[in-house]
Length: 152
Image (cartoon, rainbow, N blue to C red; front, side, top):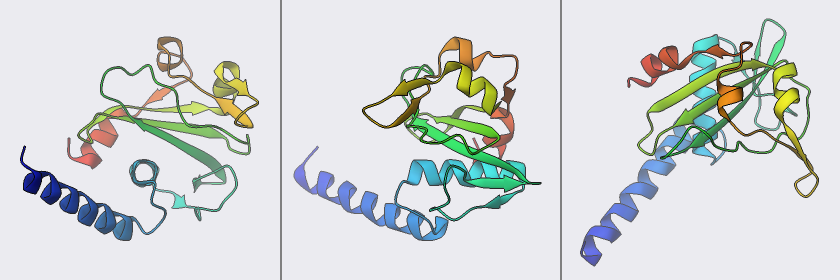
């Protein structure tokens, strides 16, 4: 690709990034913010302020933390750090590299606690989306619902 083509793509990317950031009206972590948008549309709850400790959405006095990741090769991926457990459910959204929903799940906090590993360096816990976690009987698969909202 010639230099002009790369420069044009770069400018388009940044323009669209800023547009999406404005539309979502939250932070610049667009993957996370968009996942929260999708989960909230599914749950029909209320998005909490980005600075809210440990939760992103509230529905009928239940708190949901949302974690997401873009992945191109496998569903077995590590999610971002969980710093506190002041939520009731963890919502996980895995996107492919063009923004389609690969997998979306809801887990009770107790399930996540069972599989999360303490990471002292990052001062929190890490959850890897292993087959064991993805197929856990307590998980609720909401992939099809989010695909519909995402127009996949």
